[in-house]
Length: 152
Ligand SMILES: Cc1cc2nc3c(=O)[nH]c(=O)nc-3n(C[C@H](O)[C@H](O)[C@H](O)COP(=O)(O)O)c2cc1C
Image (cartoon, rainbow, N blue to C red; front, top):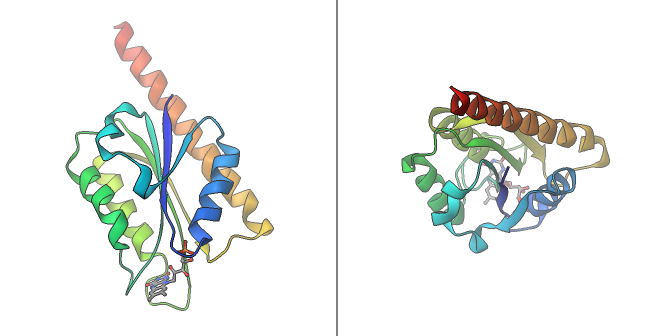
């Protein structure tokens, strides 16, 4: 089950979170957004998107093309999750995660979301592991669904 983790990070908080998620999901491929070829999305069964939040609950500009591609691509069976870092003292904590969540819920098989305050701490590791466990379970369920329908 081919899975990509694609993230955008300016200061390193979201990068560290993406790497922690990758450590629980070593079979995945990890990409910075600038290294990810949007035309390959349909090759994946699973996609995890990571982003920080900018402005007033906004998507950072560099992640917008991925958002727009997922809005129009025909990827209904794609199992997805979204994670991000933000700061609770802003009005829209992790607003970019909320934006991805709503779009991915409509267009893909959204499994799970995760919001972390700035740099993750050791105390967040159990939530990070849970995030990957829920994602893996949904991927497996989706795979079984396809195997069943192929057998009919
Ligand atoms: C100008 C500016 C605007 C921000 N706006 C928000 C916001 O609306 N909501 C939020 O949760 N965090 C906001 N943040 C905080 C960042 O999302 C947070 O520090 C994040 O962890 C940065 O991730 P990075 O280190 O991966 O770049 C903002 C930060 C800056 C500098």
